[in-house]
Each structure stands twice: as C-alpha cells, then as structure tokens.
Image (cartoon, rainbow, N blue to C red):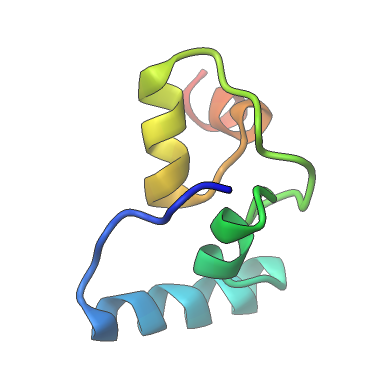
Length: 70
C-alpha cells in the first residue's frame, strides 16, 4: 500500500473532489489502494523510484504516466 504525498488538508480535499469529478475516484483512496486514479487499474509496479514518487503525487500508474509524460 502506497502513501499519498503530504498536502495541506484543504488541498487534499480539493484534489480528491476534482479527481472524483474527472475520473470517478478520489486520489488519496486510489493511492492507498494501489489503484490508478486515472484508469482504475493496478498501480503497484513502477519502472523506477521517480515513477513511484510521481504516483504518490498524482495517483497515476506507470502506464498512465507514460501516456502523460511520453
């Protein structure tokens, strides 16, 4: 189980509301459950430490990160 990056409580609520509206799932809950906030697939395997850190920030799995960052 991963841990979301630390944000202020108000920011965390706003990001969760936004991600739920866009993707149908909250960022923090997705990260705690090792699920991608974007596609809803497993998010437990990452290419490197930087990708794992990005997951704790955005909640995007490796595949979605690859689509976003190229």
